Length: 493
Image (cartoon, rainbow, N blue to C red; front, side, top):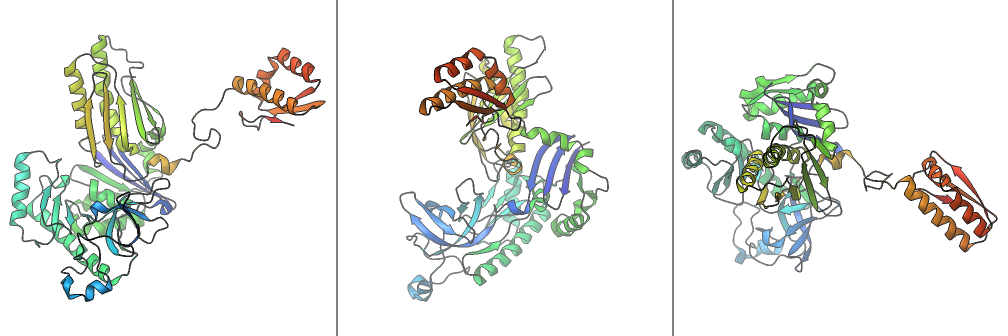
C-alpha cells in the first residue's frame, strides 16, 4: 500500500492523516477558530519588562500578550529619537537595530516569531530568532552561518551538503539550516528552495518597514500546505484530497517548487476518504488510554497537567518464553508503539515510560535503542535521559501545538475531568451522613431524599440503618428515585 497522505476538508475543519502501509503514523486537525499561530512573525511592542522573571510581555495584536525571554532578544527596532541620533549609525536591513545589547524598555518594537501556542492562561511563547521554513531549508535572517540538521547522521552526506552551500552564490548576510528532508537532494533542488525563501524574506522585510507595531508580517502556511511542505516527499505514493477547491489550491502551490510531485496528487471522488482508507477507525483509538499491541500486550497512556505517564503491560501475551525474554519482546514492541503514539497525540513536556523490568543490561540498552530509532522520524525536538535498572525511561518532548485531544474534547461535565465517578455504594453512605447532618440542624417531621436509582437501591439494602435514623430523629424519610439525576447528586428537602 506504501505511504499515503489523506486530506479531508469540511466546512468546520481540515484533517490530514499520513498512512504508512495502511498504519496511521501522523494525524492533524485544524479549525478556523483554532488555527495555529506557531511560525507567524509579528512586529511587536514591548508591553512590560519583568527583570525578576528575565522576560518581557510583548503586544503582538492578539488578546493575550506574548512571552519573550530577555536572554533571547537579539534586536529591537529603533525609536524615532534613536533613528535621528547620528551616534546610532545606519541600519542595514531596515529592521535590525544598534540596540542589540542595550537595556530593553517598554514600548520598544521588536520582531518576533511564535514558537509555542497559548496553553491555559499562558500567552504564546515568542522568540527573536526568526526562521522561515521551506521544503529543504530554513532561512535564518538574523544569522550568517549554514547548519545541517543533526538528524542527518551520515558524515559523507553532511560533507556533501556543506560543499553544495559553499558553491552556491547566496547572500552572506543571512543564514540557512539544512533540513532532514534535504538528504540526497541535488544542488539545483536546494538552490530553488533557497531562492524561494530569499524572495519570501524580501517581501516580509518590505512589510516590516511598512507596518506599525503591533502587526502580523508573515503568516505560516495552513494545515494542508504545511503537511505538503514537511511530509510530501518521493516516498509518498499518493496524496488524496476530497475537496475540488483544495485540490486546485494544492496544484497552484506545488508548481512553485514541487512540480515533479504534482502527478501524485489525486482528487478523491468517493463518499468518505478516511473511512475507505481505514484511517477513521485508527483515529478513534487515539483518544483511548489503553493501546493494544499485536501480541495482545498493551500500553496505558495517562497525561497529567505536568507529566505524561506511559505504562507497559504484558497483558494477554501468550508466547512460551522465559520471564526475561517475554519482558524484552513486549518492551521492544511497546517502544515502537510509544514513539508512534507520541507523534499521533502530539504529547509533550516530561514523559515517563515504565517498561517491564528486565534484568539484563544488554536488553535494556537494546529497548532504549529501539525507542530512539522509532523517534528518529519525529519532527518535534526530544531528549532522552536513558533507561534505569527498573526499566524507567525519562524523556522530554517539545510541545508546540495544542494536542488533538485538546482540540476534540472538553472535560466531562459529568465527572468534571476526573475520569471517574463515585460508586452507588459510596453515595449511599454519603446520603446517610447528609440525612443525619440535616436532621441534627433542624427538627423535621418529614424529609425527602432524591437520588439516582442506583443510589436509592443501595440505600434500600440498608433498611435497618434508615429505620434507625427515622426513630432517632422522629422523622419520616421519603426516598425519591430520579433517573435524570447525576449519580453524585443527593438532594434533601
